[in-house]
Amino acid sequence: MQNEHTPMGEGAANAVDAVVEKAQEVGAAVVDKAQQVGQAAAKKAGEVAANVRDAAATRAVQVKDAVVKGATAAGHAVAKKAAAVKKAVVTRVTSAKKVTKKAASPAKKAAVKKSVAKKVGAKKAAVKKVAKKAAKKVAKKAVAAKKTVKKAAKKVAKKAASAKRAVKKATKKAAKKGGRRK
Image 1 (cartoon, helix red, strand yellow):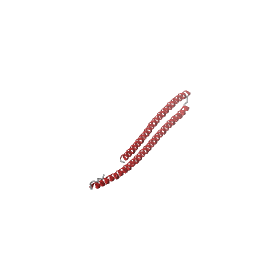
Image 2: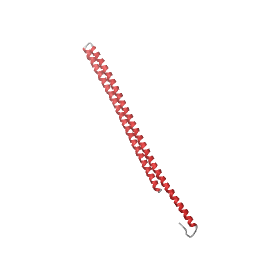
Image 3: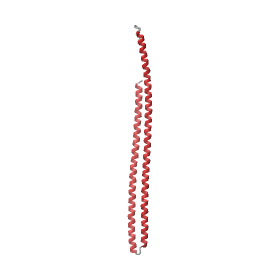
Image 4: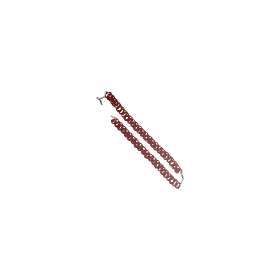
């Protein structure tokens, strides 16, 4: 950019060279800063994704534990109720047998025996019905719990995939910006 015919041409050329040199320095500084920002963004996105994944996994384990605990408690309650009903039936059968022994006439004994057998049969049916109903209830709760755990696991997987895409996008964007400014 030198102009040899005018004395001011050399000074202008030096000024232009100085401006160009300064622009190159600023450009290099901008590229460095863009690379640093890109790396920091990628690192932060990775940390966020890891935190989201870990939190979701922890929550899924907590939900699963709570469901298992609830199902176990329901099972114990059903067993306890069935045992109480069985004990009541046994007590009544025993007392009915005592009454039968005390009966004087054989006809009376037969009638009492028949009545006792009928009552015992009815009590056994009632016990079976209560146990069956309780078992159905526990099974229903277990199915609902399984669905909840499955849903939570899907949600965790979805969040992890979303976080992974966000990290990839941020990294790609930072790399693109860094490449553009060189």
